[in-house]
Each structure stands twice: as C-alpha cells, then as structure tokens.
Amino acid sequence: MTDAIIREEQGGIVTLTLNRPDQRNPISDPEVIEALISHIEAADRDIAVRVVILTGRGKAFSTGGNIDAMKIGGGLNDPLGANTRRNYRNGIQRLPLLFQSLEVPVIAAVNGPAIGAGCDLACMCDIRIAGESAKFAESFVKLGIVPGDGGAWLLPRVVGFSKATEMALTGDLLSATEALACGLVSQVVPDDMLMGQARSVASRIAANPPHAVRMTKRLLRQGQTDSLSGILEASAAAQALCHSTEDHAEAVSAFLAKRSPRFTGK
Image 1: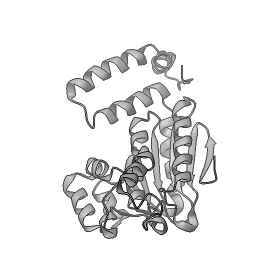
Image 2: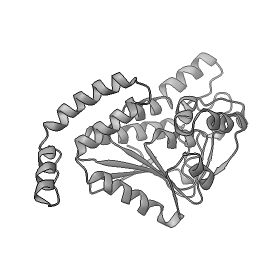
Image 3: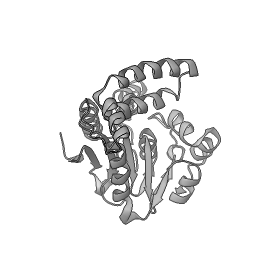
C-alpha cells in the first residue's frame, strides 16, 4: 500500500480517503489506481466490512485525471495510440469493472468538486451524498477527449440519457443542488455534516444482515443490465441462500419476540 489512500475502519465501516489534496485528488496515476483497487478488493473479500465510504482529502473529491501528465508521453497518453489503448485498459478502466462486480456497498461522500473521471468515480459508487460545496462535471470534451473510464455507460444510468448527454457534450458544471435535482446525488448536506451523514447512512446499512445486504446490492446492480426473468431467477437463488442463514432465523425470532436482533454474519 501507498499513502495514495488513507484507510480507516470503525464498526465494520471502512472509510477510504483519496490522499492527493495538493493535486485535488486525481485518480489516473498508477499508484492511486493500484491502492484504490487493493483496498476495495480487500473490503469486498471481508464479510466483516459492512460498508465502504469513499471521499477525498482537502477541498476536492477528485478532479479526475492528472492534467499535468496528459501531454504526449505522459500518464495514460503514449506516442503510439495502441499503447494508449492498453494503458487505459490496464489502468483506470479496471476501476469501473471492479466497482460493478462488488457486493460490499460503497457510499461516495462528495466533499468538493467531482470533475471528469472524478464525477465518474462517484457514479461508480452505489450511493452519493454531497456537501454543499460539491460540484460535478462530465468535462472530458473540454480537453478534447472522451470519457475513457466508462462514463458513457455510467452517467446515463444515474441521470438518464438526456441529462447525461447534456453534461457530456457541454462539459457544464453542476452545483450540488442541480446534482440533487437530476438524481446524481441522493442528499445534499452542509459541508461540516457530510461525513457524519455518510456514516449515519452507512451505520443504518451496517445494522442489517450482511449477506442479505450484499446480495440485495448485487441484484440491484444486475438489474441495470439483466432482463426481468434473469433477475427473478437470480433473486430466487439469492433468497434460498438468505433463508439458510442464522441471521434470517435471528431476524424472525427477534421480530416475534419484539426485541432487537443480533446479527453475526452467519
């Protein structure tokens, strides 16, 4: 691990903080990508981790690519186009593929600008909560490039095709209030309440049986691309697994006894 990501854990909630505040937390650099993938994969493997919160250190969530490294021969860009293609596939494009496969829920606590790939990173998360100073832009066109990290797939699924097209073709900046209006975020709170609110939502998720939470999240993700019949079949299989857990028996017992349940992840 590097200091590209700060990891904290409390009560089954892992907080990952992008730690390049002097550069406004770009995510295109290899060390950031590798650290984020390592931490996220570890959280997904560990059933004791109930929720992940992703945020940025300093005044930005993430301004996306490292523009200083975008000139030819720097960062993902290579004098040979075929190598640039490989750099994207072996680099930043691993992030949306990973996030799409996760079962652990991920909350984006957007503490400032989420621009370009930073906006797409927020869209990779399951829940987005914004501070009042948050701003969003699908701004690749402003640099003469396209959303190379999957934004053309991610953004329409979050805000709809029309709004996603408007954002991607204009590169316009959205305020937190505008992001709330189009469904890009589910809540906007004062900046000083952002992490507290993200932890509150995370705690309410973490209080539920972890296998049921993870399988429900998986079904919701699958529902973005699968047919109804496919989701019904997957739901039946997941339900069979849930019915066999000790946590399900505990939930029923606690409900009938009118007491608080004690879930163990078994």
